[in-house]
Image 1 (cartoon, rainbow, N blue to C red):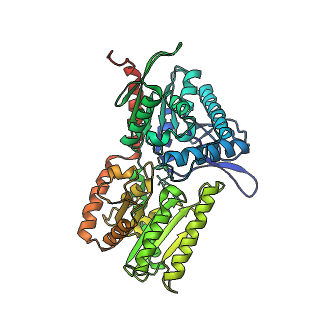
Image 2: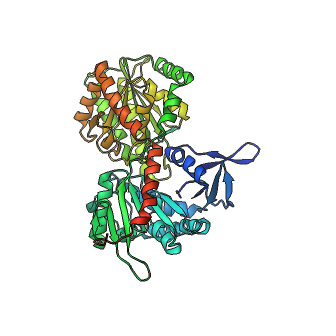
Image 3: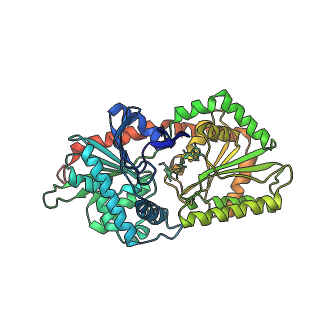
Length: 469
Ligand code: GDG
């Protein structure tokens, strides 16, 4: 189950509707698992007020959950993206706490839970994805105590001092504890969750176990809260980047940029968690101080459109575009732009070509569950070249220690890292990239889904209360 289905509805010129696999790591990761298990995918079709009967697509049963315009406004844009998203990313932006948003979040979560309950066979395994559906595990357990329920949170889980702001904090904790296994990106996220459980419910915890006492006719249960760092389809990405036409396109991109000595790249959804303004500030100052020149260095910033109906995202877009315009106006020349700014999405092939064309990838997120872009860059670089500058506040930095790690709030530190990356000798780049590639190869996305599902399956045999086993 996920908020969005793995397929998008596309309508052609003649008005004929068909389905296309939606892009993204989650779909790539779970599609083979779902096909092999004969599973069903419960989620929203991506368009409001569309009631569609279940259907089969590419070997997967699709169970659409309808959402109205007002569901989208209150449950999705409101509670999910304007309350939980900023709260879980350490209140980089102020979360809105509105009771009508919360109420609709609960209503929509129940609709998802009921849809899953209706289609699951006895004893089936249900894997619930992400923060939009945190109440589903407990609702589903109540409806169907026979099910094995997993939950994975793709975004961070904040420290208790922050989480405790949420007026509905206890309900969220109770919702998640309905799962047998609650998975997080980082060890720290799982720890934050266990601490919240202790503070709010007083249940005993012993990593990775949480002991939930029996209540009424519900027996005592042992819940596992643990880190399962997500990854990408490494082999698939390597294959893409190795294609001759992708390599040729990478050369073309560099040529079109004026063959500068250094191409730097940023790839992000246009989101305030990604630290795009911090990156621009650092780069702009380096140009202003003459430590870099547009003759030698250029920055390509892809900012994929995101959540454009949410006000804080509109404001952020204005701020970024103002800054880009200023930097280009102040330092660009007729032949050399400081920043190539692209506010649209690209096919995967083009993304791979950009990674190959970039000498330096800048990931300056202020908080990020994992950051798959960093892993994709590493997977693309079979030539063992390229420097990854990576924020310490990404989940990926737990694994990718050979990157140049930065604190994006420390603008001088970011500037120094950029200069260091540009000046890094070839043998140092190779050494670091080799080490990064080894880490990424060790944990690809099928490893992620297998280890989660294995833990979930095994959890069925470990329901002994604390002290008893
Ligand atoms: C959330 C968490 C966590 C981007 N632009 C285009 C495009 N992309 C692809 C990238 C990458 C994905 O989107 C973005 O993934 P990230 O992990 O970087 O960030 P979020 O979207 O915020 O994802 C994050 C993730 O969930 C998984 O658990 O890592 O922390 O926030 O794959 O390549 N792909 C294409 N065209 C684009 O223009 N084709």
